[in-house]
Amino acid sequence: MELLHAIGDGFLSVVGHLGLNTELMERYGPRFLDGVWVTLKLVGISVFLGALLALPLAVARVEGGKFLSRLAFGYSYFFRGTPLLAQTFLVYYGAGQFREQLTDIGLWWFFRDAFNCAVFTFTLNTAAYQSEILRGGIQSLPAGQVEAAFSLGLSRFLAYRKVVLPQAIAIGLRPLGNELILMIKSSAIASVITVYDLMGVTRLAFSRSYDMEVYLWAAVLYLLMVEVVRRVWDVLERRLNRHLLISR
Image (cartoon, rainbow, N blue to C red):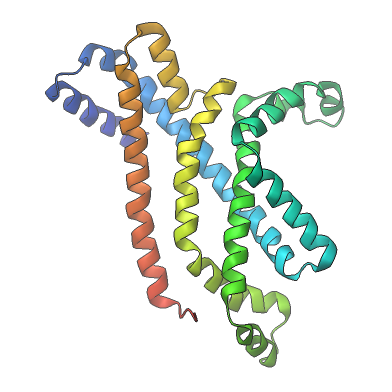
């Protein structure tokens, strides 16, 4: 949070030099920083949990047999083929239709919170995309990679853990970074279910000030987050691909 406040002070200084509304920035600047923090939490948790879910989904697509493969495909097909906004509404408003049942099983505390509903929906959505990226990485590897692992006495689990998945992740690192960037931009959808992320704070500030300038600030802050992720991902990709031998 101290880093966010330092960024805010610098941003306020830039606003002043550009001749923009410093009074408005002084009033809503701290709220914007809180919104950035909520956005980062929302995206970070969702992408991390989505990655955990994507691994078994990708393996099921490749190794799961007829039933599991079709089940994993159906999951991916639904979440990649329907709008994230519709999915968010379905979870947030749909959960209220089952309040009694969710209360009986002790889950209403989770679904009554808008932030939790956004995390749940975004996790399911990004898992579908990440699983397809990993599936593509796995299937791009030569069959001899797995056969060589088996010939060394590795089980299928160890073969995937030590041979297949590290290379598949390295191959899919760039599209995985693109997915992270898309999630940062798509996180603005959470504002429509009363989550005060960056876009939620922006809408609040506009409703009280009627100054379109606040949307410019939001656009700049989203751009800064995306640029930081892009640069970090470039460094990460160079370092990982430098040490991993990828057969193409």
